[in-house]
Image 1 (cartoon, rainbow, N blue to C red):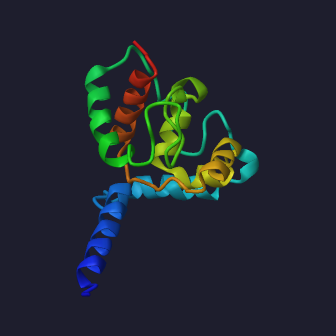
Image 2 (tube, rainbow, N blue to C red):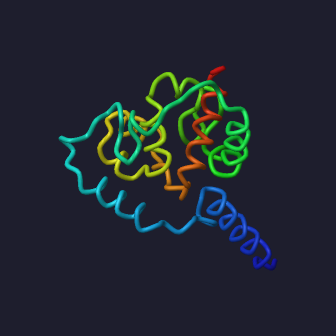
Length: 163
């Protein structure tokens, strides 16, 4: 029996799985974004604010109004490619936790900081560390732009019933 076709199919499936989880198509970081990442990574754990998270988003630069359905639609499309292979829109856990209620449990800037730059928060945030113990898989950095992250947040708000 020739095993080459089986090996080829398995390797192809592995490549697609890596791409689906964010391994391909990442955008290059700007100098400003790189300095934000370095500043976030170098902050001490005692400076960590669990309501804000670690990153450039805070209550002064994230102001939400009524649900923006256009942004939510764009966020849904982005999440279909970058998020739904690991997250369900219900409370049910897939690889990562379900998204239902995420916008009621966390501040908008915490969500934006986490989805745009998860690594520093995984190291410092007690909620994320507890989830990591359940899920056993770290959330990968998907290379989201600020706009992508904001659109995903708007989709999360729509999923949670925000009007």
